[in-house]
Image (cartoon, rainbow, N blue to C red; front, side, top):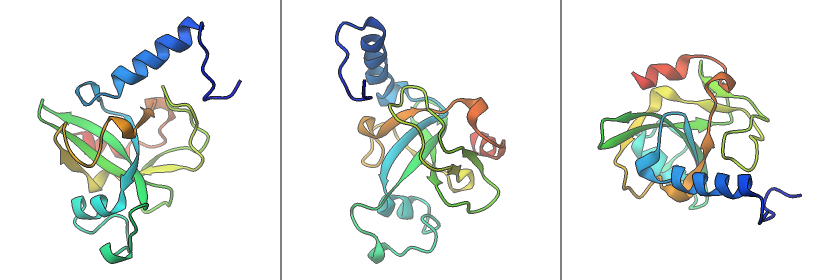
Length: 153
């Protein structure tokens, strides 16, 4: 059965879909959440031109995107995110290719390097990261390296 095939009558699958829907709400976001399809233009602005590396605003299209990783909740009014890259750009922790995130329907197709030193804060309601971008939850024991924890401090 394919990942997107509806499995009516399967109580576990239906419960998991309800949980995924609730978990993707901004009020329920937690560290280690992973979000996809974040605009490169927005990332370039939020990281003061440092990510994506070597890119200029006028060279980016509307469809250029990268994922982001939620490092921590900053009290009740903000979340600390950092971009992720499939290209190794330094001494970063990474989520290995073929890793399956909790609540995700597919696994990673490439390594996801967590660029923890390029973090930025966003309020729960924002125009950059939303419920529709929620992809899944990284398991701490699947992340190679502890460097990402520096961004959680």
